Each structure stands twice: as structure tokens, then as C-alpha cells.
Length: 132
Image 1 (spheres, rainbow, N blue to C red):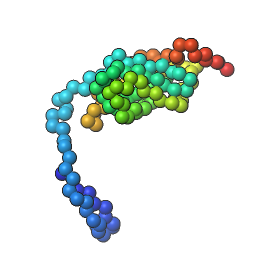
Image 2 (cartoon, one colour):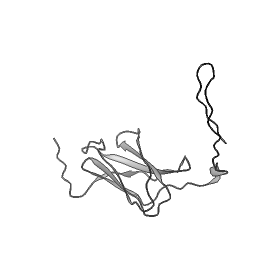
Image 3 (cartoon, rainbow, N blue to C red):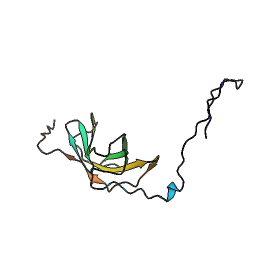
Image 4 (cartoon, rainbow, N blue to C red):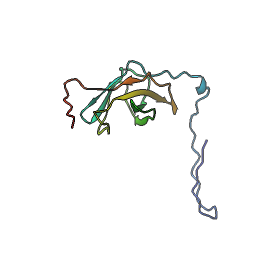
């Protein structure tokens, strides 16, 4: 049960009505496996991530790092439907002249799964990258 109120410095203010919500018991015992069979590549200024149909998660956390660094950049993809096979993050700020590594995890009941194995991000076949 939860009751919320917003008060001023004299603790005056109306309280909300009581709201009931479900809690998850023994969720710590539930194994949240890493996403499997995920592929990703760079297409122009977008990151395209392919996930298998009927995947287990509604939200994903994508970690990307330059090959020369151990520091990850974190991106969240939310409300990914069960039939959705592709996540596209547009205007992805990567320099296509550098090499990058990626891993992905899923979110369920507010908990993050184990991460997938890290893999190299590639440039979409057929896309011409001009080096200046």
C-alpha cells in the first residue's frame, strides 16, 4: 500500500488516496538470462540491433564502448514488443572511423539481466564510409 502527500514547510497538504500495488516475492531467486542471438551494426547515423522474436524482455540496455577504452556508453530501449525484431537508435553519435564493441542486457520487473557477450559493431555491408 502507498499513500503520497505533498506538503509545505509547515507539513500542510492533502494526502492522496491509498493505492495498492503488487510486489514481487523471491524475485532475487529468478534467473534473468542474458539476451542471446543478438546482432548489431551501424547504418549511416543509426545503430540497428536485431533481437530474436518472442524475446523475454520489454526493455533493453545497450552498452557501447570504443575498442580503445573500457568506459561504456549506456542506451536504453523501452517498450520493445514481443514481435519486434529490430531496435533502431537514430542519430547514434559514433565516429565510423573508429572500432566499437557492444553488449546488451534486458530489463524485467525493474531488474537488469546478465549482459550478453561483448561483440564488435560492424558497418552495414554496402555502406560506403568516406574517410577525411
